[in-house]
Amino acid sequence: MSENIYDAPKSDSLNGQNYSQRSLIARILFSILWLIPIIILVQMLVGGVVGGMAGAGTGGFEAGKTAGEAAANEFFSAYGLYVFLGEILLWIVLCFFGKLPGTSKLKKVTS
Image (tube, rainbow, N blue to C red; front, side, top):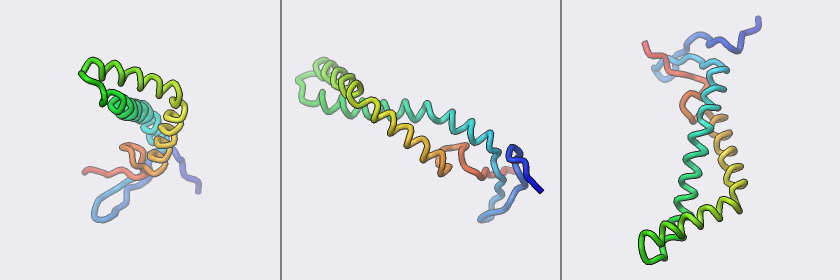
């Protein structure tokens, strides 16, 4: 008897909590939705670190802001593809192992 992969099967008990399987379509949609926040977060972190390192040695706030912005733009023009590939790899790994909300195979049943 073949199962329909789009339907969520029966619930099960694991460690005293009830779980049921999340449908494949829901997992794919949640995975796609998580791509944008991951890209934004990594871009912000990398740009902030690069800009902060470049602006740390300047005399004042405006000089640091200008130096940091220029350094971040230069870094992303030189290494932006590698950063983007790292973001995609991070997204794939987190989605594959179900670490992002909505991407795990099992969901908790509240009743």
